[in-house]
Structures are given as C-alpha cells and as structure tokens.
Length: 359
Image (cartoon, rainbow, N blue to C red; front, side, top):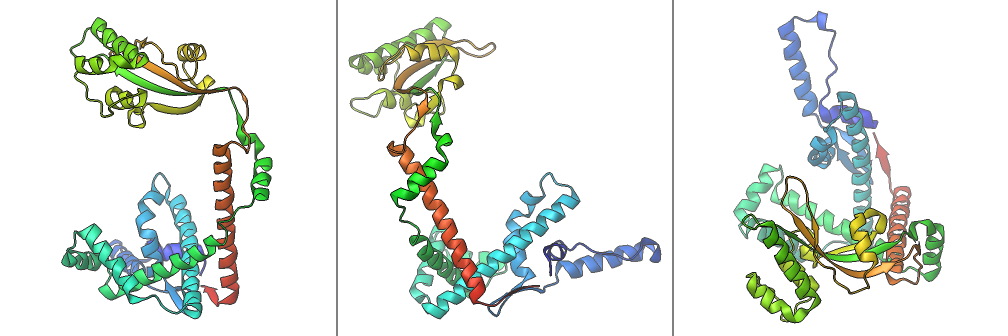
C-alpha cells in the first residue's frame, strides 16, 4: 500500500458514486456510512520481522501532529502532507520493531523491575502518585495497563539499542575536527564584534524625567565606584542578593529587560547590528569599563536609560580551531553527524537482516 493510500484511509477520504445516481438523502447516508467505515477500518500497513504494523499504529503516531500539519494548507496540500508523514511514520515504526527484534535475539528481555520503575515514576510525576487517575488516563487513550506496559518495555528496548549505537560514535578524533573546520571555514569568519552587559532602566510612572535621569545616573556612578552601591541600593529600596555585588548582580536586581536574568549579558554581537550611538560609546571603552547612563527617548513612551559594560571586543577575522568555544562547537557538530550516520547505517543493516514489507 503506498503512502497516499494510507493517508486516505487515515483521513477517511471517501470515494463516492456519482451524485446523480442517488437521491440527496441517500447520498448523504451512503457518504456517512462509507466515511465511518473507512475512518474505523484497520488494515495491515506493513510487516517488520513478522510483527504486523496496522493503520491504528499509524493513527496513534500521527494524531498529535494532525492539527499542526493542516495549519494553513489547502485540502490537497494537507492530504499530501499526511501522505508524507504516514510514509515516514511507517518507516519509523518498522525500524523500532526491528530494533526490538534484534534486542530479543541478542540480549533477551528487559528486567521487570526496569519497567515497573518507569511506570511508578510516571504515576508519581504526572499523577501525583494516584494510580486510579493513571489507569483512568490509560482508558481515555485506548490503553490497558498491559498494553501500556508493553509500550514502556518497547520504548526502553529501543532507547537502549539506539544508545549502544550512539556510544560507538562518541569518540571524535582531531583529524575529523580539522577536516570539518576546513570544509566549513567560512562559517567561522567573524565581523567586528563586542560582548556587552547592559542594564535597562525605565522612567517610573510617578517619576519626572529629571528624577528618572538622576536615578539612572546614580546607579551608573555606583557601578563605576562599587563602594557607593550599598547606599544607592538603600536609597532606591533595592535588594541585591550578593554581599559584594558586581554589574551582573545589580543587573539582575534592577534591569527591566530580557537580559536581566543573565546578569545583563547580551552575548557577542557584530557592531553593525548595534545602535550607532551605542557603537560610538563602546568603541571608546576598554574591556571591563562601565558607561554613563545613556538616555533614549521614544515618542509616546517613557524615557529609557542604558548602562553598559564592555566585556570583550573582537576585530574582524576568522575564529580558529584553537578557540575553546569554536572547538566545542565543531566537536558537537561532528559528533552529531557521526551519531546520525552510525544510527542510519545500523538501521539499514537491520532492514537487510530482517524481513520487512510495506503494503
């Protein structure tokens, strides 16, 4: 059975007799009957080492994604998308069954305690320890305790088998890292960049512009002279957790932007992506230096003040493999690719070794 046929059965797409052949009421009844029949039909869609894969299996796999798949699509586009997903789902279920068959042939069985422990953890975490609620949830999703136990056993087996394959690909030698870096050197070309921390302060609802400016300037001055921080915090009724706070701790306590939780760290940014006025200020600063409060006026909004700390500066150039961050990134990419290739190769070998049929 091809993917399009599968999708038709999954969706219950009915093929009706010509409209003129039946009275209107009979047509509607016939259409409803046929649609109901096809929606509830179950057939063998594939076979993996003697284990049948049914349309019900595919429906369960696709059900959580149907709404997302159909968003913004015409009927024809939706049907084609479902056909593609159904085909991929059939392959995934087949691969899972082959991995389970390989485990049972080579390892044996999962200790019952592993399955029990997984189920008990689910009951504790998702149902607050209430086993009755857990069983009711199983019934609502068409499972029995026994079928759910089988589902957990299969999941444990598949994760174990995939984990074994992935471990063989974890080691990444220097040669592979260098080869990847050389092939992707253009990705590591950097523009002139700066790493900043920032504190954003907004004019309060009950503050005058002068009062807001004085508050921002007081914090900027205190950050440049940390001895003033305790008095400034007291003056503006601010609690700073650290005993000897730095810029990051103050940012977390007083900044009103999205970077506050990160201690004001905005990361590395190309200068061309930063406001020209800010570029002019930070270009004249040294690493570790803190700016004055920079006021920005936005029509129709309260005034904003930014206090900046320059953490680092990089001229335009190419990051090398000797840079720890670059090396870590390359290692991650090479390892991910090696794991993907190892898993794909192993699954291809299983398909060759075991009987597989798509209908």
